[in-house]
Image (cartoon, rainbow, N blue to C red; front, side, top):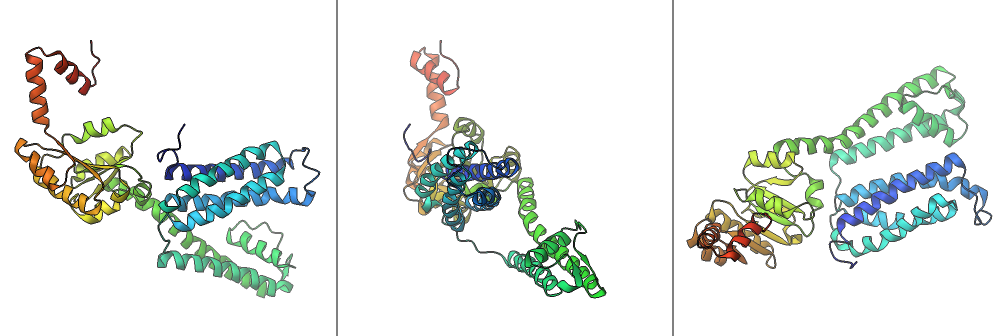
Length: 384
């Protein structure tokens, strides 16, 4: 099997990262529950290290899940984080010295080349919104307030003697679990506990809202027939359909599941139908620059303009060629006299469905065998 661009792709890098993250979590949990599996290398690794790597492996797995989601959005910071975390997961797998950790080590090592080969694909800079910054600052401030405040007032509590106790008390209070092993021993301690509860619950509510907002926006985008960020960020070596017409559905069927594609159309009803089928669609004018840049025309392998309006197709072709001169552009001319015009607009290849259909019908009518076989092949029928 050759290492083609399709094989070592952005999608492969992201899927491998998700797989390593999930496997790291599973192996870490197995190591915690079983205490590790004895092996010949167990004597080389200190017991304290073997006990610790189970917890750190699980935490690393959850951290890598975050970096995988950053990769999914093409963020460069996600690439850097994953490059750092992959060797860590491999080392933790080796330190766990069990048969369960061997797949984790292997998968971590396999993921590195794919990630390095696609470094240039993760080119988006992460610029957190004011809401995200506010949520992060609020969460850190609330936890810090509870931790350092309870430690400073440790004489007012029973069960708080170290910073770890204070942090534990803050998290338990903020989550409203309240185990009861740390309690306020004075009026001041009770008032402080109330303030910690209110501040942390509010901070966690804000952070949760920030996390849920993208998911809500994704559902709204789907209902309105629009692409989501996660969809068009994953487009690579894809085909762009410039507009929606009678030929669009046959084109989609023949592209199949193995070829990535996106549709840019002003037809909102068609866009909603495509979105319901999980097809990447952008409700916009295909002759505008912004939507074509949004569907990553610079990374596309080809563009197809095949609507019933040859004039609009010509404008879309001009824009596509202006944004990506080496892009292969295909067009369908509804009027035979527009074939040359679409070529002048920049189309690399132009077909006339009416011309092709007329020739096939005429040749079939006069009994030409090759014409009959060609028509059956085009229609997906088995030849005799």
